[in-house]
Image (spheres, rainbow, N blue to C red):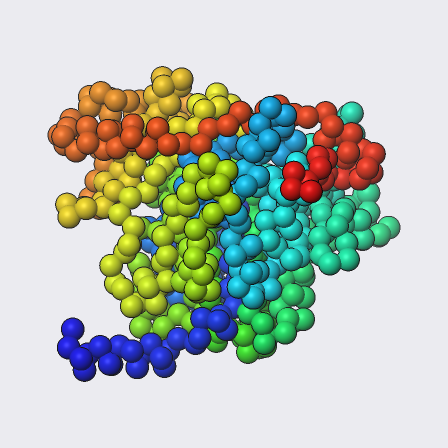
Length: 556
């Protein structure tokens, strides 16, 4: 590059990019959002998919077309918060009441005690940090909470999900326990003031005898309140982890009525929930624009994993045309819709589809190093002998100062657990590698499961439906170590994983398999323990019917 060309680039960046110290970060994490649920991913224009706002936003955004996460909720969230591939932090989707007293570092659900969360870095760099919504990265001690990981304020819930109206999740001693928590400078405990009346439910949304607010509306109100009250002289870091569109399939009746033309109740509910999500995003983005914050905002939106399709479509999700869904390592489970927008995105990057590999755990270094200008190294974890971060700074890619994607490999996580939300050994379940010959994906099933990978199906553009007899869990494919039963795909030419090339590309297959074996030696695989009865004791007595931490702070 000549001196004049270099000077032009510097001038261009000076014009289009605000000082990183003034950048507000709004990170929106949808839950179980299927690839086919957003209009900008649909080749078929029909009346089912109604996401007009985000479709319009995508036209002025950078669409992350090769964005990868974990196949299930908790591992994805732990990876995002700590900047590690799931195999180096957590691949188990166990409930937050588990505890192994013999392991004071990793004997809990979620993030190990000594790992540093990205919000800790952002707080230290001067950002005001807030988390709204689902946590699902640990509950056992105060250290495992969002506040313990660096967020100044939090309103949300601990578990994988809860009821959108009663906020109930699981039970203790045959009685349901509520999951809604508030943490700020003056309060740390159950959010009792936001509790709906006892008769409020999906079937009774206007009970007339007290409060009855949809949980996503409650969370959206909190997000908008934070934005309205924010002092713009301080940069804002707001992580909004939506409940939508995770089960249970519940939504305000007015939204269901919009989709009365859909016969299948599961698909009708899913499209109504996605439409509600679209409206919530519209309100927040419009507020950012009206307050003048949008021009200094980096706005990130993506799902934590693919849509849930499971047994007979009762979950309502759809990842068409990708294969599989949540709980599987097919593209429909780990490749998700994502975009980057906001005023800090240079004009020349808007309206493009980025094909570079990006992962959920790359936001850690992107925010800490790229935006805040801090060293993202986790020294505390290193001192405890824990794995280092895997995060790659994507700031140069996003802003266009480096058009070459810095990531060439994605480690796919897996578990030997025989049940979906059970505990097991941490496994490297495959690799995605980009080289001069293309984009390659190797899948390896768990030996304990006979190398089988579930949901070897593509659902169809409109699914579930009343005439479908497809049961995704009844369809599994062997992805083993023998080329004849191996699973190797060229994703550039075969994005839907139709034909394995393991036998044709045997040298490549063996090379990638050897890399998997090498990576397997460095996984983090603690015994997270079993459900601790003390968690229920705290929920029923200390918190009077709400979930919360039940063990002392290990740093106290």
